[in-house]
Image (cartoon, rainbow, N blue to C red; front, side, top):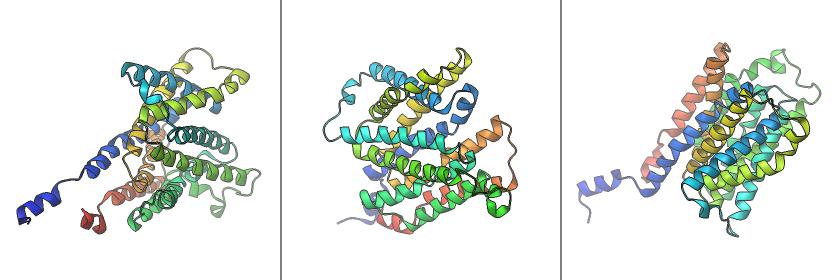
Amino acid sequence: MHTPSSAVMAASTPSPRHHAVNNGALPFLLGCMLLGTVGVFVQEAHAAPITATWFRCAFGLLGLTAWMAWQRQWPQLRLSRSTAPWVLASGVLMIASWALFFQAMTYTSAGMAIVLFHVQPLWLLLFGALWLGERVGRQRLAAVLAALFGLALATGVLQHLAVFGTEDASQNGYWLGVSLCMVGAVCMAGVTLCAKKAQTSASALAWWQCLLGTLTLWIWPAQYGWPAWGGAWLWLAGLGLVHTALAYTLIYAGTLRLPTSRIAIFQFVYPAVAIVIDWLYFRQTLSTAQLIGIAVLTIAISVAERPSRQRVARQ
């Protein structure tokens, strides 16, 4: 029979799963924050999008190979019959999502592409519920919708829609760009689900994705030309080492420990940081609506992380 004090101690002692979830939040958030600075490296490299993507994979592969060799983690790269399909599928979906996103930006504005691409947390919640059987709380679903609205404000997209009389959404190719973003968002949600099903190490998962990208995209720079030797290569190296090898290792380390409902809301940290970096680095002036959008994003993430009554009752 439990005494009152022992019952209190048992209730206040975090479970191993609780520790795993909390340990997964920090690397995932750090990885998303690193990705938020990717625009600076792409801008300074002055390389074509697909060329930058290939360098991202190639330098990421070099960095991860060196790291795994130093840590003697080569056995982790072996794929079993159960893990190989998930690892390879995640790599194919990742490459497809990058290509679709870059192509979509040629048909729509960058801000619109970012907003549409980040509809993927909604897909992630849906797939997580249907495929993994994870319960989606109303609090987190509402937070994701609020964060998406905040993102639309923060990127300034709402100021350029046809309803505001400043942009014609019926222009040629616009809806093609919208479709590409939606398909890319589904692909990115699939990457997260495949990563959870693969149940392999974060470094190994990122390594295989970089290998697939390096092998499939090399034809682009080979056919259309390589960047001039010099500073561009340093920025591209940073793109691979920092924004791929390091960032995705952190993100996948968190993905393996977090439920999809938390991943869905945490993913909004990436575009939020990107907007702030544009303001700090590129000196882009933020409108009142954009500042409100950033505030809405911050509040939505905070509310999503606040324990609900149901979660507190289950602990």
